[in-house]
Length: 283
Image (tube, rainbow, N blue to C red; front, side, top):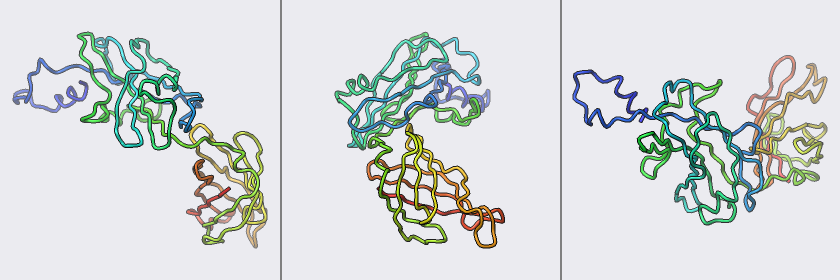
């Protein structure tokens, strides 16, 4: 394994090793990520969606002539907390490689029909060497392999040894259309609540009418991972003696309980009022 090889580099040449040197394997490190723009959350009760992962061999790996092929593995954690794994795809020999995940078939491997709340899927890889030795990406005793390489930088991000898909309720933007209640934890309301109205602008954007009671705020939603962003928006051109009162922030959506939550900054051209403001918007 590559982790063992790295450990050897720090050992003195005349030091006795606790294992035969002939037994040390030159492993191959595989990077796996979710394809950008594809779904990052499973919806309870359905296997529909666009799920894709990309596997590649980092340039830091160097020589990988010992590699025969790679297996894509699904690691399933059930509602009871028990974790098992199944091979989803075998004989992967081209890198980089993008793989579409058929969740219906994946769930069949675990004798299940569809995702349920409380479950989590992870996808990782097994490495099969030319001598048929298998370097497991996960096992029940030590968990995921190759955590030691997370310091490697790949295309401006950290090396990834698995892709995680939690199960959540299906996100329906229309659930946030109509009457809403805002709990406002900014310095202006200090936890007080007030009514508002949600208006759907598109499948990825809603407008909160009545934000701060008398203005409107646009929220952009990423339905693939149930997150949101509030780009900097000027709500009042003048605010007392100051100019361009704005709000900006980011947060998440709890589709099960119908709650939009975000943290952000409230300020004006001349400075900020609150850099740790937060809001909860309930349908």
